[in-house]
View (tube, rainbow over the protein chains, first blue to last red):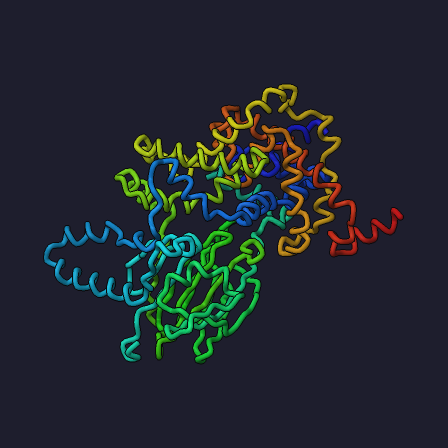
Length: 164
Length: 149
Length: 223
C-alpha cells in the first residue's frame, strides 16, 4: 500500500513525462500490483470520455450568434457573407515579388476568380444574410475551397470537354 | 538514449498489458451523395436542411438526395462511395483527434485528392463530378453525425 | 496515377499565426475566422470549469475580447492555441474564484486512506476494454458532465486542462502555478472523485454496460 501511494499518481502519465527511473519503477510496480493495474484499467476505460462529452455539449449548442456578438464587442460590425470572399494576401505578395510572372499569374488569378464567380450564386445578402455561412475562398491549386464556419465546400475544376 | 529506452519499456507495458483501451475509437460517418442543379425550381430535400448554409453559397438551386449511407471508419481504411454515373469516390481518415478528423477525399476520375479537416459538428461538401447539363454530384461527409444534429 | 495533393487547411498553427498577423493588420475577417475556428473548444473548456452553460458562453466571449485586445502584444513565442487557452483557463477560473475560497481544506497529497477507495476496477469491468464499443461508452459519456459538476473547482479545472486541452504535467504546473508533484497528486484525486461519481451509473445496470459474461455472472452470483 505504501508503494501504491507513491506510484498511483504516476498512472496516466504520457510518454516521457516521468524521469526514466520513475517510469521503469512504475512499470515494475504495475506488473506486480493488481490494485494499481485496476486503477490504470479504470483510467483507460474512461479515456477520452470527458473531452468527448464537453465537445458534444459545445457542438449541440447553436453558435450562429457567437461570432457576431464577439465582433460587436470588439467594435467590428458583422459584414454580409458574400463580401467576405477574398483572395489570400499571400497570393498578391507572391505576384508583387515575381514581376516577370505577374502578367501570367494575373491572368490565372482572373481565370480562377471567373471560375469562382461562375460557381457562386450572387445573393443579395441583405435579404437573408443569416442563411449564409461565413466564407473564405482558398484559390490554391485548381480546386476551389470555400472555408465556411459549417465546414469546407470543395468545387472541382470546370470540365472543359463538357462545356459546363 | 537510456531515457528513451526506459520510456519505451514503460509505455510498452502500459499499452500492451494495461491500457488496451487507449486507442482512438472508430469514427461514425454519415455519407450522402447529392445532386445539385442550376435549373429550378429551387428545392432542398428536408433531410439536407443542415447543409443549407453551405449549399446556398453555390450556384446550384435544386438539391436532391441520391444516396444515403452511414458507416464506421477507421484510420487508414479506405471507404468507397459509388456515384450514380458509375464513378467512385474514395474516402479515408488521415488523422483523428478527440474533436476533429482529417479526411482524404479522392476523386479518381478527376485525379484530385483533397485533405480536409473538420471539427465535430462541421460537414464536408465536396463536388465529385464535373458539371453536365447544369448539374453536378456532391459528396457530403458528416463525422460523428449524432453530435452534428 | 499522378494525384495532386492539396491541403486546404495546412498546419493549423501556421494558419492561426497567419490569421493573427492579418487580424493585427486590421483585417476584421481574419479575427472573425479565428473566433469561428476555436469558439467551440474554448466554450467546452470554459463549460468544464464553470459548469454553467450561460456562464461558459459569457466566459468564451470574454476570452475572445481579451484575445483581440492582446493581439498586438502576442509575440508568437508560444502557439496561438496555447495563448488562447491560457486566457480561457484564467478567465474561467476567475469567474468561479469565489468557489475556490471555500476549498482550502482539499488536500493534494495522496495518503494511504485514499488508496483504500481506489483501484476497484469497476468502471473498466463494466465498460470492458474495447474502445470501439461506442454505444456503451456513450451511455457513460452522457453522465460525464454531471459527474464533473460534482467535483470542486480545482479538480474540475485540472481534469479539463489535462483531458480536453491536453496539457502535460509541466504545462499544468506552469498554468496552475503549482509543482509537478502536486499536479500528479491533484490529478489522482480528481480522477478518483470522477470515477466515484461515475461508479453508480456503471453499477446500477451492469448488464447494459457489460456486453460480456464477466459482469453478468458477477450479478448472478450476487443475486
